Amino acid sequence: GEDVEQSLFLSVREGDSSVINCTYTDSSSTYLYWYKQEPGAGLQLLTYIFSNMDMKQDQRLTVLLNKKDKHLSLRIADTQTGDSAIYFCAEKRDQAGTALIFGKGTTLSVSS
Amino acid sequence: EADIYQTPRYLVIGTGKKITLECSQTMGHDKMYWYQQDPGMELHLIHYSYGVNSTEKGDLSSESTVSRIRTEHFPLTLESARPSHTSQYLCASSELKRGDTDTQYFGPGTRLTVL
Image (cartoon, rainbow over all chains, first blue to last red; front, side):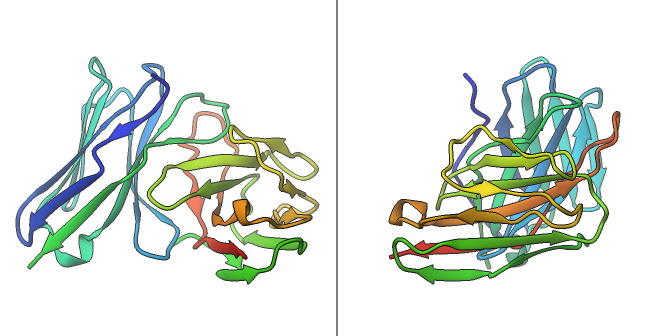
């Protein structure tokens, strides 16, 4: 299909790892992004990965890319209550193209 | 930290009013975008611009219009607001540089409610 797919909800306990999954649509997508949105706020870029990479790590965040399956995941180590937010996966399909194609977002709830 | 601003943050207005949502960025980015986001839904592109005097419609049809007279400014206008326009409107910008990540930076959004 044409949509970027994400599971809608994830609930974890503080200190655990969170893994948010995303399936994108276009194998020619050049960049894939993870954005975080807190209540009432805009989107904050967390990280991105270029399509020729398998993995990218940035402090507590690890992005894994399986290009064959068009599957992207975001792992948050040692999840904190401040990580509670909606996480959006997005793909950029065209180098000179227009906007990003977003998933519907995964709501991460962290309990203490 | 991105320098992109949107005003107002919240707007409640009656049907039939003309409204303009402001978006400004101080990063000198050529590309700017407007997205519409309904609660619990993904973002949909409604307008974008590659630079001054360039405006294009996005994937989602919208009754709003935009203008780009200055690089840093990309206002969105609704001539006659209706309840169906109630939504969150997010502005973003990015650099127009081939081969670059074209990372988009977002403003805080305007939550519009039309009564």
